[in-house]
Amino acid sequence: MKRSQQCPEYGSRGIYTSQIAARGGYGPDLLPGAHPWYRTGKLDVYVCEKCGFY
Image (cartoon, rainbow, N blue to C red; front, top):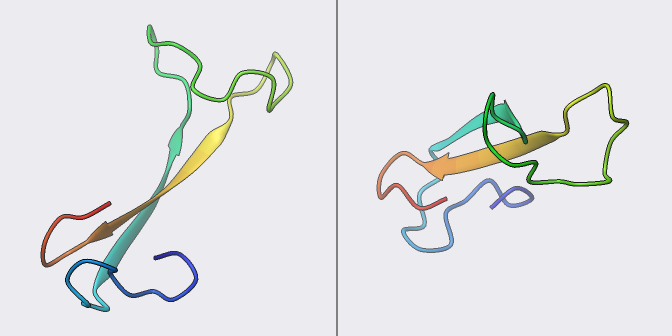
């Protein structure tokens, strides 16, 4: 979905993108070792606006 900018399930080109932290305030670190201890890793999120596929 990231490269083609098209949903593999629905075929829509309407893709919402966002960047979120890999570690919530009290949650586990989803990318351990992928970043220095003083910074939080980032995840790119892609969601189809038609069907919600991510």
